[in-house]
Amino acid sequence: MKTKTILVTGASSGIGLAVANAFAEMGHTVYAAARREEQMREACVAGVKILKLDLTDEASISACVAIIKAESGGVDVLVNNAGYGEYGALEQVPVDDGRRQFEVNLFGLASLTQKLIAPMRERGAGRIINVSSVGGSFTTAFGGWYHATKFGLEGYSGALRQELKPFGIDVAIIKPGGTRSEWAQIAGENLVKNSSDGPYAAHAAALKELFATGGGNEKLQVGPEVIVKLIAHAAFSSKPKVSYVPSGLPKLMMLFHWILPARRFDKLMAKGLKLDVRHTSGKTA
Image 1 (cartoon, rainbow, N blue to C red):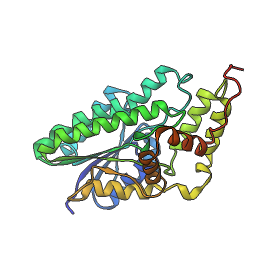
Image 2 (image 1 turned 30 degrees about the vertical axis):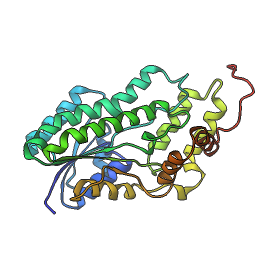
Image 3 (image 1 turned 45 degrees about the vertical axis):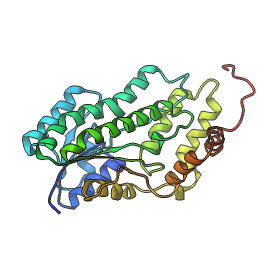
Image 4 (image 1 turned 90 degrees about the vertical axis):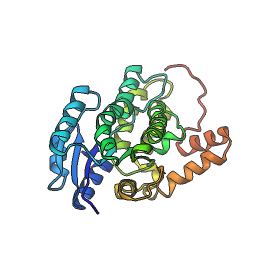
């Protein structure tokens, strides 16, 4: 396999870190980018090039791209993995926090991607891999802002794929669900921050517990290495798929969403997330 130049965002932990290390060990030139620069220096394998990147800061995005272009001329593969979940009841999450969720999960991603397309187009080859979520296909309570960003990312990715295909650039989306990483911890912390008081407190507490215990069943979760294999196929296969969904719970939930009427699916999700207890009063305590 020809050596590729690869940029992985959100590479300080979880899926991003696993991808950066795996691709570096394959012999590729890997740039790992995230806000937590020191954490990457400690966790990344030898040879990985560390870049500080804040997707809410246009100057940070431009600086990151400038370094890559100066050293390597651009990238062959872009893995847009950075993202987080601003969980909480939509009545309670400050709209400014929702805006920041979009800045990280969609607008910052789009800005970075835009700046790296031209070298791919000029070479007539490239891969852009956007890590979305099964939550880009269906919604769950308390994840409204997160789901909105992932639905947006799926629309963005589809249009980008169609626009870039004539130039030899492929765009794929990865749709994890229930991956062992920091994501659930951060989403749970945001849930407590936003909805631990008031009329949603009981449901928020139940969902926070579910996040903390991995859905109550460790077997339902997959390790980052499973997602690494999907991203590797999207990056290096001669016939990459448009969309990748891990086997197990993510595919099962996609199937349920496809075959069940909307209200039946709502009931299924409410029961699974332990949100099926009806409040006797909507009054704020």
